[in-house]
Image (cartoon, rainbow, N blue to C red; front, top):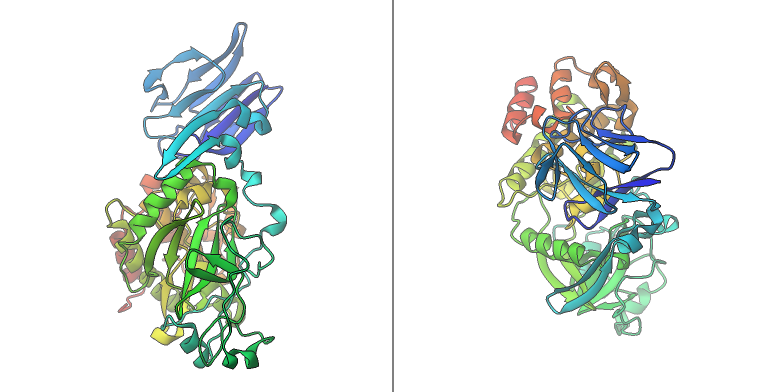
Length: 472
């Protein structure tokens, strides 16, 4: 048996594994006739073969950009158990195991002990196992749930305006990830709160206190678990009259020093974000060994919810929203280093009724590339390279095309992926009623090769404004 494991750019974290029990040749490349298909601009259509020879397995390079082992370009080498090859100098890493099943990779790939700040942890690849990241019974789709936007950050003023805090996913029964969470540390309710106890309200309309809390994390009282995916958990919290959101990693990642380092690094970068169409990131702190990012809660109706409740929108309106999104993405991509959103979809655009129907872009969390790699997008919004743990500015632009098509048709974009003359890809020309002038723009946006798409947000904006001039 031979097992191939695609590694996240943080090299020790497995993303996806393939087991081959009977094949004597395993082919890796970008073409769909390979055993392992990797969508990357630097990966050749037929890039590398792993062959069984008389003396054992060997790796044979076929790609024009080369295959590298320990930084050295190879032509043909014998396979050693656990060896890591890189496809092209900047391409994906693949680890090769001999006679090891995917479930046994933890024992075969020890990562040793590392230290981050005050944390010393023993880490193994087992904690990165995709299936272990979150039990499937606990994962709930947020596609049908509304999100809401509130201009004032106090819970009291939100409810006084008749704006109820909406959950993204109703998962209050989930166990919170922090072992330090004190479930006995309840707020003492005021007399005015008693009239609202037992109702659906989360906060007292008179004093603004939460009517029920799940415990505390640091100085924050947890009001509700909003969302949980395979990587992390998001909670609505209250502190001294202010509501916030906390984002952290699931407990399954607590032993992954690299993931914790990446979370803190990206969270610190998000603290510098300052744009009217993006949430405000307030603080990063550690409690019980877990890193937390404190965020401003944004409330509004997602564009997915708009289409689901009121129907599709006009081409002019759809492009107007996409152009607004381009403003936010241009700001993110111009940061140093560039911030790639990596989760562009209608659910992460909020229509803010209090701000002249402008949209806000949410879903911007730390460890974004890792989240996309372990929780693939089967709806068809994400660029192909993201499922291998890679993302570029053009990956965000790719996702704007299927988002635009959803706004126009109300159909999930995977409806329009098929195997045709250019292989398996998104084919906008088969979208019913699509504007013919829009087709070449969408085709360029969704080219499977990142370097064949629009090179920048500016190029895309010019193309869209030429199609439908809008003063946005």
